[in-house]
Length: 219
Image 1 (cartoon, rainbow, N blue to C red):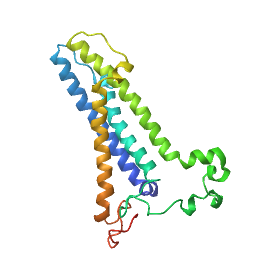
Image 2: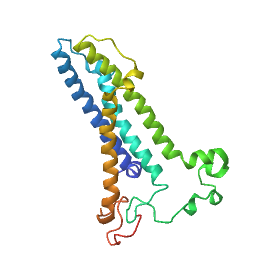
Image 3: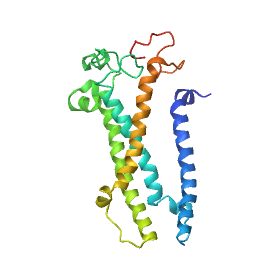
Image 4: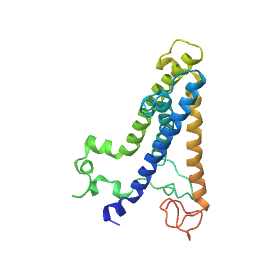
């Protein structure tokens, strides 16, 4: 196996799975959408045309929104909160790690750590900022895709006039879609936090070592 593949195997597999499942979602979503159009006597659309519909955008961004909210919130909360015994928590009483002190920055350290000031302030929080910015973009994508799909459904069913994205933001339909995903994401993270106290997965950095007592916090 080439070294670059071995060194990046985890991200290659995860992104590869993402593209496979996104492609399958688009195919099955296209078929489902055409079935819905047929019920109202409308003409089916091509797969390429489907990729530009609200039906596809809504289904994609609705899920991205919840995933990145979960990850961004989790990264930020674990900087301040602890769970005794969990592999997902930093040890009780730990504040900054020695490596987080910019005075220890060396020639190979990232440049914001070397220059300090505003670049360092942003860099110190860049992971949670990036994840939450992707969440914000996905939220907007969900809103725009959702209102397009809502207006299409209303036109097919009753010929009702379209509504704006701002109006759709105030509907229970939009927030129902969001909440049903948000709750499941935080449940999954909470389960991982608590289960990692007493359960193990040999070789995984998300698990404490097999022989470590349950009360020990952090991997």
